[in-house]
Amino acid sequence: MKRIMTIQDISCIGKCSLTVALPIISAMGIETAIVPTAVLSTHTMFSDFTFHDLTDEMEPIAKHWKKEKFDFDAIYTGYLGSDRQINIVSDYFDSFKGKNTKIIMDPAMADNGKLYVGFDEMFAKNMGKLCGKADIILPNISEAALMLGVEYPGEDADEETVEALLLKLSELGANVSVITGTVFKDGTFGFTGYDKAKNEFFRYGTEKVPHKSHGTGDIFASAFTGALTNGFEVYDSLKIAADYTCACIKNTYNDPEKVDYAVNFELEIPYLLKLINK
Ligand code: PXL
Image (cartoon, protein in one colour):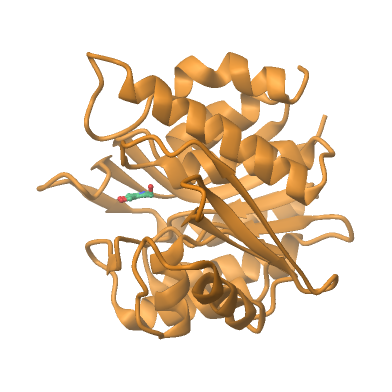
């Protein structure tokens, strides 16, 4: 069985980070080792959330795993809580990147041009530096602009602007840079990417459902990591992730009992498994 490591927080309620990565990647038939970076009562869009930092556990976990000689087909990072965690994750990459280990980073830290509560511009820059060690990075438009220290161009940035951001992102070091949540002239919504080795841009759009919610970036990155680890090509894995995320948003949009803090990713897992023929 393939094994991946994912490093992100546990938001006890919120359907984001580990509470989506673990079920999605496990459902895709992959052993999912977790490094929880913090425990929060909810994600940070609620007020008065609790936050218990687990940074002090991260180095001992790595030390034990090294001793046991665990190896990983992929390392996937999401929300990280502090600059200190960024440094420790950098050490994780050095310690656990084997010849065939893919490093996938979703620098989850901002939306709509604004950093999440608790982060500053220095944190964004440091996240950008860490992205230089990844093979594939998956920021949204806000995260791309913040990591590069350029002005936020808005959610409806045109294709030329997005491509210019991608070229700059690729200078951080990852071979494949993908900006999620881009809009296209034909009214669809999806991702735009750049493959540095092939010097090629690529894009894919799905139906734009008029519903914005939390955690969709985490669902996208988790499904992408699962598909890639199952042997799909990068572009096909991104397409699977986009189709699945779109289905989750649509399911939620049509649900009269929907919650306002997350999407119904659970109900579309059978569709995800169909997409990967499992
Ligand atoms: O979905 C990204 C995410 C992950 N973890 C925490 C968050 C968020 C988004 O707000 O607050 C704690």
